[in-house]
Image (cartoon, rainbow, N blue to C red; front, side, top):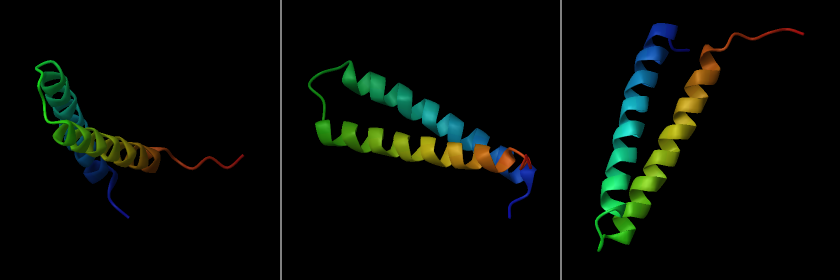
Amino acid sequence: MEDQEDIRQRLEALRMEHHDLDDAIDRIADSPPFDQIKLQRLKKRKLLLKDEITRLESMLIPDIIA
C-alpha cells in the first residue's frame, strides 16, 4: 500500500493533468474544424484520470467502522 504522502503527490499531479486536458479540450473544441478522433481520445484520457483521482481519494479516507 502506498504512503499517504505519495498518494497526495500523485493526486496533485493527476489533478493538474486533468485540468490541462480540460483546457486543451476547450481550445480544440473552440477552433473548428478540429480532429474529432483526437478530441475523443483526450476526453477518454480525462475520464480515466478522473477515475484514478477518485480511487486515490478513496484511499485517503479512513475506514470507519459503524
